Image (cartoon, rainbow, N blue to C red; front, side):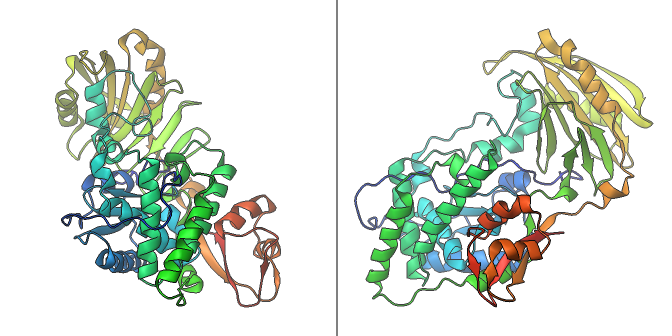
Length: 475
């Protein structure tokens, strides 16, 4: 949460490189048409994931993106942005903007891998793949953990940015489109002087991350499944592309890239809020509250969501302005379209508060729902816990809604207030050694060797030579 709220959390359903099946061999034909205009990042995307503030990496993606745009089949006023999500992903919007997460930036091991994926995403734009797809404006499963329990106006009101940020980009590309985007990625990255075969190697890294995680968190390949032949196909396309430029030497730029990502946050950033032991902590805003045991959670810049595992109830925490709880209550009733609404002033754990309760009528999108919101004043900020469930089952979940709201309190524990994210650290091998031995020498726990090997695009038994750079993670 960032708001005053929480910043972007773990989940993000974007659209990156998808499955590719062989079609016509060779590089794709050049698409034709007029330029697109997409140089500005979409506010809804930034609201959902947050902007990653790293001027050096932003300059890198701008420079390489603009180089590719200039040699592309459909030059246009495109834009390139890095967003603050730990999920390993990249995606392009039909209007002409490419987004990379900081999560995927951590897993590239050279500029050639980075530019290959960048070219792939630009290829989706220049080939106008997104224009062919029907936009899915339904509430995405990860966008609103509640799923399909009615209350569409609540969804729109408390999850509007999530719906727009996620739903609009839930485009499913065909295998043919992905084939073409792979070919265009090879073509564009080769044209600006990079070894496109490295993009194929990156697919293997992505595959290993998915196999290791065992997680349902949407990532690069889970949103666009990999195909068994993709590695070989892209390797072949890269070889053809190299021949097309006279077999000249093509850049990989491993050391330059690794030095550029020194200090990149790795994984979740606890400064933006984290869950531990069924408690949500926010170090920067200095508050805490309990999370119902077993409930799913999602953190985003605009809100923190808690959902009953089977999607039967949702409790969302979000900012409600800087006025009074009474003013916030009145605004909330209007915003959610509550009927029969009743409000009562109270205190919760010492904070001035109000409780608002009412119903939402059924619509074509779903059955009605009962809503109870707890608004608390913390200094100049007002926060809201909005709980909802089907009217018939609301009493089942009401005690959990109340317990969470009553548990809101100041965060004073130094161990939580001072929690820092892990960061990528670039090390130099002091002699010939294995990656596992180098990791051990840097104090990495043995249980994380495979994770760090994947991060390096290597195996634990691979050998490092003296002076070779490699990645570790640390505070």
